[in-house]
Image 1 (cartoon, rainbow, N blue to C red):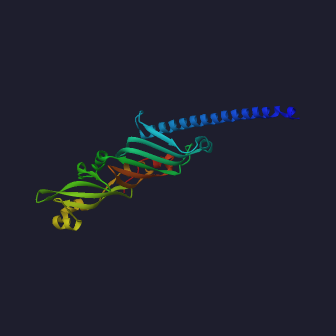
Image 2 (image 1 turned 90 degrees about the horizontal axis):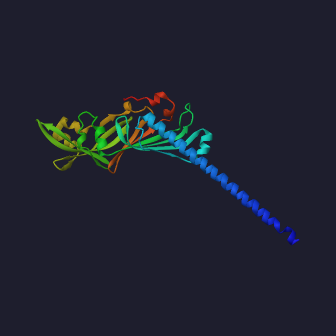
Image 3 (image 1 turned 180 degrees about the vertical axis):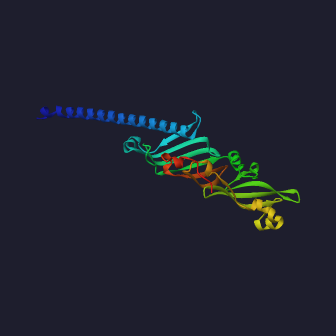
Amino acid sequence: MTDATAPRPRRTGRWIAILVVVVVLVAGAVVAAEFIARSVVSNTVRGLVVEKVGLPADQDVDVELGGVVLPQLMAGHLDDVTITSDDVTLGPITGDVRVEMRGVPLSSGTAAEGGTASVRLDQDQLRTLLAQIPGFPSGTVQMAAPDLTFTNELSVFGVGIPVGVSVTPGAANGDLTLTPAGFELGGNSIDADTLRAQFGGVADAVLRTQSLCIADRLPAALTLDSATVQGQNLIASFGIAGGVVNDPALQSDGACG
């Protein structure tokens, strides 16, 4: 009985070996298909970004796709898409950009779920942006986390007196704001009341909150939510309406006020 049944385990072993090979081949095919799909989608997204934003053809744009791509393609949308690129110009802002979008449809007739964007500006890029505020001494701006500092001159009887100003960046109604946080006169820290007592109405030039509207030069889908100083950079953060992928009105420039 033992001799008659001995070959069966060998045949069973062969089938197991064949099954393992088949599984490995199928898994390899799936991995290859996933790799190809991910590459094709990433390249397509990169091409669309370069075209729509008007970037140079050789711009370094990195596209990351979250999760496994093949099931998302079958479902008709991409769960998470992250796009990063350095030295990108968006309207009046030039900096390093990171965009994260959720639920991006593969058809043009559907809106995405929404997303966020952040733009990192170094000191020179920030000075260029703030130069658009009339009369603002943007050339003296320096990073001093969590604030910015600059020097302005207050004219008293024709004599310019330098005043150091610290401002906290922020956002209000989509505008970039600079709210006074501290002052320095003659090497000494003073408060707003003391400054006004010494200079009267002339001090209004540094006491008031400065604001810069950028909405009229950016797609209406983008709303400036915050601006913070982190180290030697200012980070401007935006909310993105999902309709930017299919609504011409949201793709067009917004409006101030």
